[in-house]
Amino acid sequence: MKLITRDTDYALRALCFIAKNKDKVTPAPELVAKLKIPRPFLRKILQSLDKNGLLKSYKGKGGGFVMTLKPNKISILDVMRIFQGAFNLNECLLNKHLCPDIRVCILKKKIDRIEKYVVSELGSFKLAYLIE
Amino acid sequence: MKLITRDTDYALRALCFIAKNKDKVTPAPELVAKLKIPRPFLRKILQSLDKNGLLKSYKGKGGGFVMTLKPNKISILDVMRIFQGAFNLNECLLNKHLCPDIRVCILKKKIDRIEKYVVSELGSFKLAYLIE
DNA sequence: ACAAATGATACAAATGTGGTATCATTAAGC
DNA sequence: GCTTAATGATACCACATTTGTATCATTTGT
Image (cartoon, rainbow over all chains, first blue to last red; front, side, top):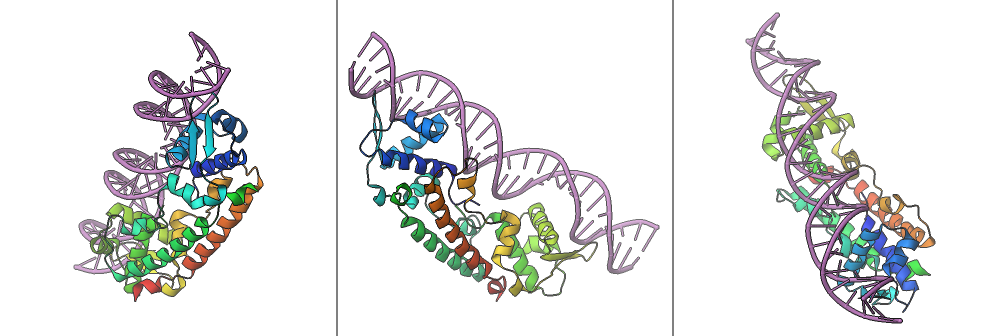
């Protein structure tokens, strides 16, 4: 079981790099070269980050990407949500069979508490911490 | 993202049912009927539980399964480990590309702490709690 | 006009999840 | 000993997800 998937990982690396460039526009080819992420895959990731408002893109020659927010305004959780969807650790228990008895409910409560913990830990961990 | 997969869920249901039967041998067909789990899938799950020492099986007519341990000696984590492998939330970060810079390490530490929390919560949550 | 960039979208390979099917083996009980 | 009811072992399959690829259109600075 992994908490952070490949695309989230790539996205974090890319964001860190772009953030370090400050206001300078960072083109995708530069990221490919420096971060060793497969080119088309990175392009897709950057497009997602753009659509979700974490990056602003400039088309055409001399184009590329810049941050829209300060790195201390973006959390790991924000990025995870884009690529891994909303947290829902209880998913399976409710999935197809409705919880038929009390035992599921007490386990569900436990898992809900765990989820709250994870969300709070990752939600307070900012991109800025990764850059210094 | 789900914390508990289908087979773990099924396994927990089956274990609860078998535990309630105490020393009485529980045959798989009874579990199929009562728990509405697809028959061949349940069989596979029971075999895993047997191989991992949580159940003892009796072959032949009148055969079936009994618990090998008291329900307060089995944790949710024990069952998860059988079906979902060892916990390793850091999996992806170390996956194919070795961590190239400090930023991965500090995030890794955070995730390690989260993992410790989850393991301790689920490791102390015993099957017995689900049965009462 | 050209070159360097992103946008959009469709495709494909590998892996994981959930489930099925089949046949062999064991043991109780008449 | 035969039948029957159970598990053991194993191979297979369908589908979804993950990871990655390929292609062409569009935009923009020089």
